[in-house]
Length: 202
Image 1 (cartoon, rainbow, N blue to C red):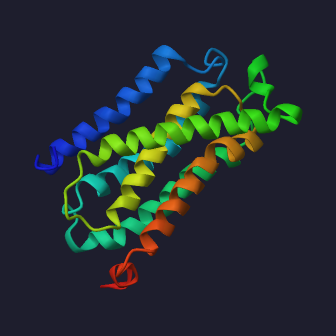
Image 2 (spheres, rainbow, N blue to C red):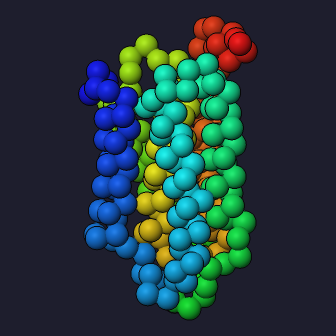
């Protein structure tokens, strides 16, 4: 599919992302959806989904912005971090469901580790599928956009599945997925020969 028009690849990427979220809502939705404030759910999902669409566009349509692409990527990555961190910085959405108050005390590590593992696994699956749509010979930097997009898609899925609302859990079990993914991606790319020149080239 790498040879398909850029717009087609973007639409397919969005369909892959949407299919994952729909599957989660149908198969294993969060248990507190009936009491979760609608406005807050929309806000949380928007903070994650909007930068996901932006970074996915950068990853699958790198030629659409021409010379502006290199300048757009750092801004998109900052937007990615702001969106993910923003969800965790907000006050707890509610405490109206028994499962929403779990994940603290002796439950803290097991619950955080479970969400981190699920989020990491979803990230690997989504990034693997999205790479099928990328153009060969692309800039190594576009992999960061792809990684950010895939991780955000996974975080949306995690948010639709996990009923825990405490900010500490969101930091440790959800945002940590993005931190590890982007840190690993930057470290891997930075070790590539000529990567410093690629980043600093005007």
